[in-house]
Length: 575
Image (cartoon, rainbow, N blue to C red; front, side):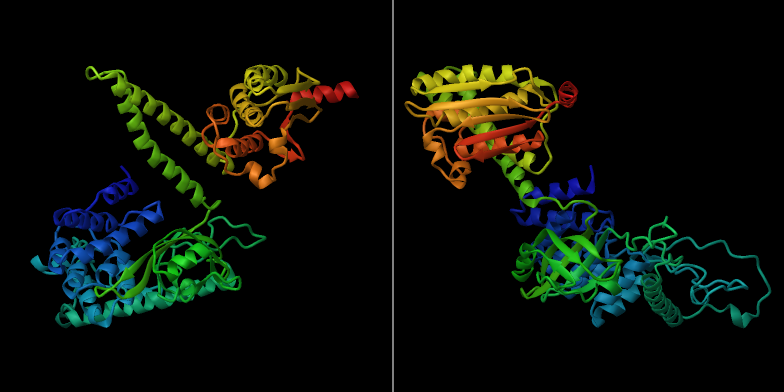
């Protein structure tokens, strides 16, 4: 089970009691603080938002007790930073429980208030587990040769972040004066650590500026490789390969802090203006301005080559204990491909939510109608049969909506095959003839080349053609004559269907717009969503098959590609 699945499972549980709220708070802190990567940034935003809501329900002393649990993991600097923005006892418990690496402690020190920085430095050098045993020696004998200033400032043994590590084996004893063997004081150690931090931050900024200016690869910051490993000699490679960046956005919409690429991202103003260096879409700008959560927002940055491009923004609003808005905790994810379509995802999610209760209704109605649990009065059986029929029609309509959404966004295509178009149209015309006879209307077919084939599966092509023919025939009135023709060329197959007067007088918006079925016969022919939806679905199916559906005055023209080998053979015959 991935971390995304575990977060999604926790968020789906309703915290309807104090006990469940405390349990959910502890689970979210443990999962977010595990230090593992979450693929879906919207889950992280939703989790931080839920944590803020739970913090307003749970008393501060109970949250401090939860954070003091020795089994809890706090390896995420953004999470610790958010926990430190609440009450003092919660902030102290979060700092004492933090288990961060060198970069995490540096980030935490830079974003917290001065009142908490001393406690951060203390926790960084001692840690919660260091209180039970004496600290190991931090400095050992330095090597005779130093190659850089960083080596002169860095102790030979690393400073433990939380739990004490086993000291390295001591070097062979060498005669040393007694005065030089004294252990350095704690104040000297803190001063050395602070000097190391200042040097590393300054050196990292220098290296970043050098990379941006020259375009060459650096050997200092391998963990944040800002250049591609294999670059062409003739042209400089793309500079940034960082995919995800955690950041903080101020109430005014400015990036105040970034965990990575900080010199280039800090200070950027997120604005929908075309001239902005960090342009956001209108929906994202509105959500930020209204202090709402942002999911899958689009940010286009045009600045340094290391950060330029399209990014996805997921953000959760952050408030202090009295309700004052402090900004957003956000994550920027570089868009490596096409941006996800949020509307399509929302529609498919809504369809999934609708199918669940409809399936339940259909199942229970069938149980009643079939008397699986015992005798049922015939009146109830009749009602249950009606419910089963209506739910089946609803499921069919939802399936067609899902099909249209997937076809429009390219996640579904028409199955390939080999279908003779002439015999298929003749069969469909025979099926629609009784409906036209009842309306005292008729068809006037003209098929020039019945042997032409198209590269589409027969079943899918039959459903698409029936949807188109039935939508036109369902609007026929007494005396209407509907011409239908099939013409084939070397490149395509063209099907022209004449519309009755009731449809020919409509404009395109009305013809293809929402129009629910007016009677049972029309619903049986076009589906419960009506003629307009049936025509839009037929148009999407035609595009997915490589053709199109257009209106030509009083007729609908469907164009489908001809099979490649037949088209080639016809060219040879003409030649």
